[in-house]
Amino acid sequence: MGSKDQGRKVLVVAELRGEAIHPVTFELLGKGREIVEHTGGELCSVVFGSNVDKAKASELIHYGADRVFLFNDPIFSGLNTMVYAHNLVRLCKEEKPDIILLGATCFGRSLGPRVAAALKTGLTADCIDLRIDENGELIQIRPAFVGNILAYIKTRTRPVMSTVRYKVMRAREKDNCRTGLIIEKMAEKLFQGRIRLVGEAIPKKLNIADAEIIVAGGRGLGSAEGFTLLGELASLLGGVVGSSRPPVDDGWIRKEHQVGYSGSIVKPRLYIACGISGSPQHLFGMKDAETIIAINSDPSAPIFRVADYGIVGDLYQIIPLMIKEIKARRSSVG
Amino acid sequence: MLNIIVLVKQVPDIEKVRFDVETGRIDRSSAPAEINPFDLNALEAAVQIKEKVGGFITALSMGPMQAVSSLRDAMARGADDAILLEDKRFAGADTLATSHTLAAAIRKIGSYDIILCGEKTVDGDTGQVGAEVAELLEIPHIYYVSRIVDVSENSITVISETQEASYALESDLPVLLSVTRDVNKPRLPTLKSKMKAMKSEVKIWRVEDLSGFLDPDKAGYAGSPTSVQKVVIQKEKTRQGRIYRQVEDGLQELMRLLESKGVI
Image: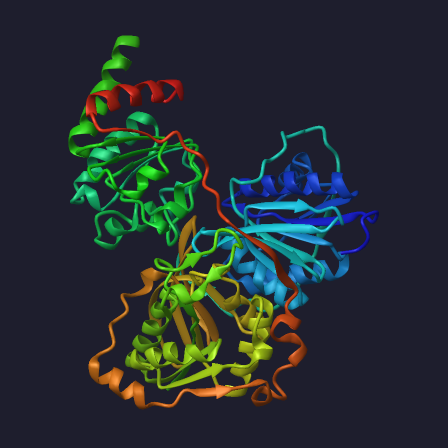
């Protein structure tokens, strides 16, 4: 990167979830704002959608963008990453950003590499921290080896590109008075039709990555029926049911409940692990929860090493007692 | 008949690998090397496609000479041919330099209809090489493939699962597919196939073998825009670690905790 007195142009690639802007976008804008406040420069954002109006795009300004590039065209409704990549590459060639940030979501992790390869630049995946060093260069921090190590990475080409994990950066407070520029862009319609959607997309019923309270079960449940009990506790607490990998592999519960390396990464306020021993792959997905409670009959289970609270015992004894106790307390208060 | 290329990487067994806490180094000799677990699903997908419509499977890897053993394993699991890109000028590559080298080898192989890879590798965990290779070859890619629904000589239909939804997608060939662990259950190699693979040749391609396809300045450490400045062993958040062996005590403490967090 250039000398430190030069301002930086940071580009945040917005992501849509249905009609709404994905919250990771606001987190990236928060980080982008922090970078340009440190180095000087400008925070831009780009949004691609088939039904995005200026009102929607202005949310990006309210969360910190100075300029927003708006691509509103029916071609941005599918999963044809080539179409997005082509238009994003074109924009980058015009605007020449110094830093490009994407969410480390399915969208960002599929789009980012294509754009990086086209721009012949480096891309760092799944960052959990970004810092500006004393030379004004961006240091990208990311886990590797299933979360065993953290690597500090620098990029010598421009733009510096990173995908950033959801729920690790802090979004700024939304400021509806903040003003900026929205620039409408024409999409170039190349590569359409190379990949076609057959029928309708089937939305997931559960979004475990967003859950604030998760009651999760593992092999120690012994059978699929155990999840009914966990479901009862989860709904009492206003949470959702999670799972480690073995119950998913054995068909006790659907894949979208899976937390861990080959499932979802979660960061709830409360994670209750029931009958989960705590393999490195599972810990990778949940160890950043604010509070972790473990219930397991094996006192040597690794899950106890990351737990704030643990009870050694039979979950089929403990959970019904918890349910009873919670109900009793509620009825005495209410 | 389809030409199928499967990208494989040799990785250390992640359950056994040790890290030097002082230097942050990864002691690769501490653990046996194996095929990246996600790549086994990519290989199995290739074998199933071949069983359905006929095909020829090439396993392609970049790595040190030891990776020959992983490519033999790939042949035992159904690959018809195996190529290792081995040269010290390929070493120290980040995802972009790796992708340039793999894409060059694929161009040299010449005809390809489907390129398969695993969702990510357990060591680097970037999941970037697939889409970068697709971009360099100017072909489409589909990530997070959890099922292959149908395949013919000209097109393939798959299910792609993202965090929000699942999509049935049909693509023209050639295409690059990155598969998740849900796509299949990889079969184990048989004794007979292992014996056969032991005698099969793994081709070794060096920088010179890719001449005309690869700009050597784009390979290896020299061609890598990103570099690791330092590595630290992940320090876990300090937890209270209050473990109760008496259910009654634990339960009361738990209720106090849930109350203090405002969840009950």
